Image 1 (cartoon, rainbow, N blue to C red):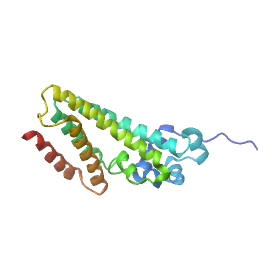
Image 2 (cartoon, rainbow, N blue to C red):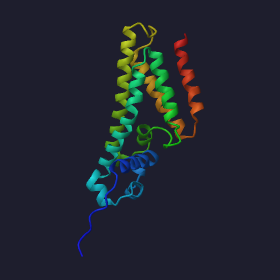
Image 3 (spheres, rainbow, N blue to C red):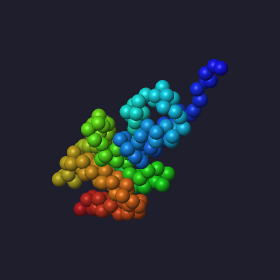
Image 4 (cartoon, rainbow, N blue to C red):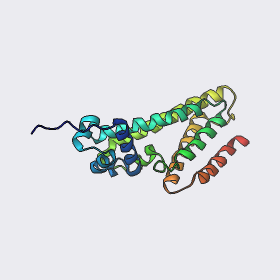
Length: 195
């Protein structure tokens, strides 16, 4: 009796399922069994389609950031620095508490629980978070040139402040904070522009 054809599966759906597992359990917490069960495939199919666990995680991370790219670009294109922060942080307050996904942010949650064996993943997550902070800094530099920022606020410090808020909001969401509770945090942060 000949060997049957491998079972076909939806690669896109399998990757989305892997993303949800990594988001929920972190890189190290997600076992190969967790991943293959969620993806509805066996280990050989996973390896042949996605590579090893690290490669699968990077592909899932690419998908995660691609899904957020539109929201980040929309925020960065707002007409004022205040509107950038408002759009971005209110967007995070909703996305990090969306009941259709695990709470918090994969890029933050994944870095909080990683040991030496996953140091390359931790560094990858740091790099991705810093890219968003760099984009914010560049946008705030433009705002400073346009006279849109108070004179005593440095773009790099404001970018770090917004990044710190968003990462803290992610931890709060993972701890069970609601969208409404995170919105209150954003409202306080926006008072900096009321001076």
